[in-house]
Image (cartoon, rainbow, N blue to C red):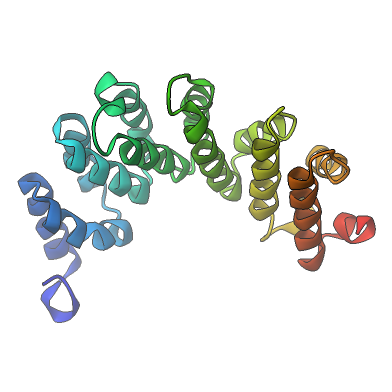
Length: 226
């Protein structure tokens, strides 16, 4: 229905998407999601925030996904407010909604997302352990977009007690510098080399793999280390 010649011009497409957002029917919402992520019109922000704040569970999850693809930093605070609502942690689909919000924060490309992600990472509750890897993935996404605060936070996590978290943090940081391998900060590289000698097989393997990947991509420091 929304492909090829049926799409029409940009303005017509925007109006079609807006009408579907206002209507709020789940099937149609996901049909226009690709167009929202490509067009990224600021006109989408308010109806998406309305769905996020007042919709049912499925509508909230869709809104989080769409807001992430929209990449408008004005959505950061509303996303976090919905995350901390008690209803977000109850019922079927609660974990999916939490994950969608965290992922959306990681897609914002703005340092303002660091503070809410830190708060979520430090949060407690039954699903706290499950949420931490989601937060690290979101921080990794921000680090790829050049957000210095995300790099600092992942560097901090590389010193955590839990081996799985240290391993993921070093992997996320390596990926963040794949497209700029010779820009890995000295402090980050130092911690990577320390973890390459970690007592945990999981952490040691992750660090060595990260250094190897960076070396293959032309990172001179990693080449010398390997």
